[in-house]
Length: 191
Image 1 (cartoon, rainbow, N blue to C red):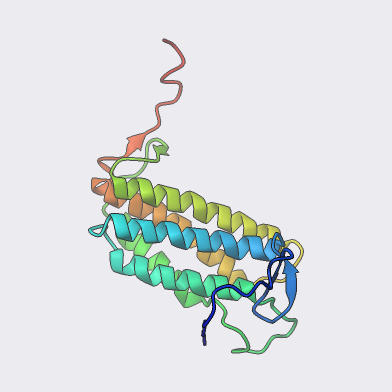
Image 2 (tube, helix red, strand yellow):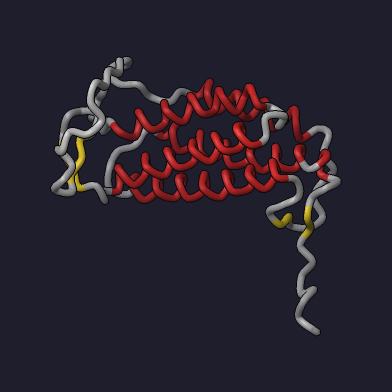
């Protein structure tokens, strides 16, 4: 599927890049922006697993990283009208359903929220909150792309579920929510 014998090709020196279907687009095209954001998210999850090897759900995080390559591959190949099954790698419901099951399982042990949570707590939770915000940015980039081009809806749903999963996992990592840093509205308004 992938064979890279040379890393630089010079084909992008003019500000264009190749999509998965062979077409060329500007490097700042909405499609490139969307899968670039997904790539950044994957890198942040790599930092989570590298810096916090004891993070709960570390095996699932590796599965998610693989899924994110699927999301990127999906976004990299424009969806054709009437595209037949198997023509391109596309995200499928089973991928985000796995996240839904994990969210439900992990959320069972958490107390309901009574305040918004500030990113922080343990190092792993802080990294997970960063991943969550990058995931939301990737999701927004896909929504922007969807305004002008056809996009596999399952890729967008996957990113939406993933940001929820990362939020819940950050709470779990903060000692089951006991170490969450809570927002105190207006706490610093008066000296």
